[in-house]
Length: 355
Image 1 (spheres, rainbow, N blue to C red):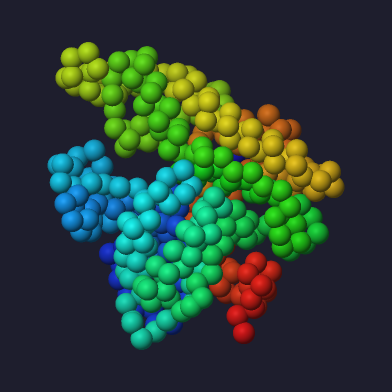
Image 2: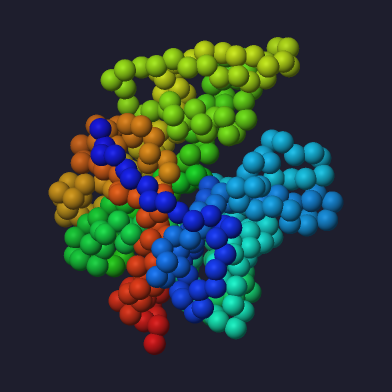
């Protein structure tokens, strides 16, 4: 089994402070958005969700408050996840959300911090420019630098990306799985699939519908995945009960299921993740594959915490596989390292050393 992962405490959006011109890093993720301020660490970790008035699109809530509204809103209120499947599905509300989060940690309008924003690699050039403009409107110093999440994750994990050796990072996020092999400061081979934690949640919901006859919400499915989901046989299997809406009567009904059944329900998305890793390895030069065999495959993102996923990938690829020390924060931490060492990483990634 992979080693235990220790999460450090993080601030919430209510922690409002004036950080002057201190640089800011943002991980704009499908499931969560994290903000790191140079010298302060991670100061904001909130769900990437907004709630708006359906009549006039007025912003009502952002982050945790908006996520609590999912599945519970009256017709005139919509709870939205602006990023889906690794792309910006709702640009206008994504812009509102990003602006809101940045303003929570940067309140001095006369001070313009340098900013690095991490986005899924599937985001288009037009969307990247839109993210830059939203950040600049919120007070960032132009230009705002955009970096792909796998690159930031590799840097945050401490992988030797600048060396002439191969390093593999697998970032299993909410909407995508992104795999990259890096060497000499660049991406040598990569592959992305629109399968992540969201698809795992959907798989659990479909299993409960088809096999148990009950409908449950996204938050319930996510809780089952986190507590009882697995990608590899467990030493001890468990049974649990969940309450949902009966598809037959429309009334609340409790049903029992096993961890084995949940693992079988998750098999399809897990297989896609493993296939994405295999395809990337197949595209990697033999010398770098040998390096990866020595260093191992590094897993990041919330999906990497699925019980048994490192063991499953190890069994399927023959490669040592481990979860990085802080899989949920490693992307924004990598962006923070880029900011701290901009003269080194700026030229390598953006062609700009900041001078």
